[in-house]
Image (cartoon, rainbow over all chains, first blue to last red; front, side, top):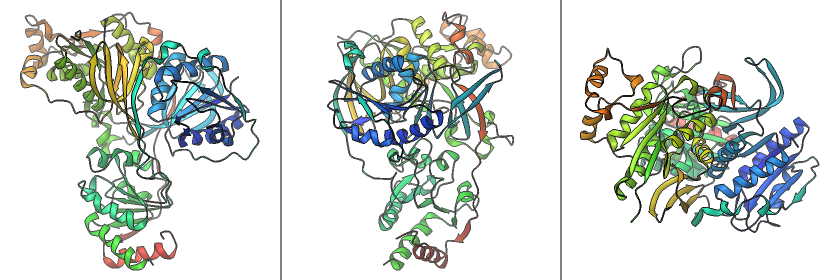
Length: 340
Length: 295
């Protein structure tokens, strides 16, 4: 009862990295609250295939639902599993990835259980809450912290009276780490039909096609990112060249993606990927808060901008005042000349 | 032959958070709403386009725009009518104010029940002021309907089954879902058609009763013209009109509470400013190489 649950997402028998990141976070929350960390996974043919990808992150108990029709994911069967399992287990917290699946499943489950859900949290903490209106005091609530209003403000959300307190978190925001403490590592395989009604399998997946990621932006030690100031899709070509010589990856701001200069999957920021590289080279990026939220933990930030007062310059280690057309080719040239 | 569809488009009027200028925040750190223009939520326009295409494909189908907000959100219905929608409903009531996604979904679901016999409820994946993507699935759950989120195109509707292509992480998926259902549409779907000049002429003075300011020219035209053209009076519903439970609406129906709201302040660093000269750029590259920051 009252444990912390993490919903584990899978593609076939491969556990999503974001789920492992959430297990690490969930373990910390569980330790702080003095409760257990539980995980729930649902798929087809997963028994014996996924446990080793889940248990090392500090899981006390894993509920693995293995049955036909649970992969590819459809809303209703996975909702039935979580709703019925949560009615039995009464968790106090449930975390899931802010992925296409998590953002389809989370709201459906929260609506079924009339519990609150906060999307795309960037921080999760435990703390107290005093309701000014009802004068009630609450101990140990989950602070669900997220940027709001296009990333211009940050709001702390709580769910005082409803359980579980649900939150989704984007991939890369939390960092995964194998748990060094002792966890119970118990695994149970509940009978799927006790949780899922036959009518739940009504949506049919005719075709499911997932390509391996074309790039590893999230894990790249060097990121070259372009903004609206790159001017065009062609303008991004020189960023790809710079990234290639530096052995890095190309990212983009939301403005550049919205303008069609770059693919959505390279978007960095609150509504895109969060990165933690060694070096972040921001080219023609003004630095809206929602972008900075996704890259502020970079070790070294270099900003190339013709505007010396661009907001991103405030958090940069190096600011090169100049046009991207002039500076980027020079970066390429002098790197080639000086590196061995 | 496929039977005509009754389609409800969920649409929201939002502040345009995409192009936030320097005056978007007040010195006190609150949002300066006046500095942000109110727009039709972008992905709701993608949803409207899918609905209008179905209307064209399946004879006799109707499209209505359902929105919730203050009286001025009547603009969303007009924008829908200008593009080819047949009707609209504005949910407006102080009791709806302060709603989180769950209370919003309750209100919308109650209105959809009131509209009745709806085959497809379709809306944008998410609104740009909250970016939560929760309202679509929660409306579906409240209505007990199947949902397809992140849709890119409704490929066909046959024998009361919709075939939909949808975006998933790292790929695409094609699914079949029986009607009635709830669909949310991704921004990668086809853009919405522009306003039709004839329809703009027809509905220019359409207003919800609460929007009508009898002292303004538009308001006077609405009062005068709607006597002979009843379609210029848009549907406006309160909590009572949709038989809603006030306890499940607005702030009191919201399980989530905002504890604090803060302006974001980033830790400013001491930065080195360089010019675009060859010497400065080469100097930086050498420094980064020497300190093994780049390899």
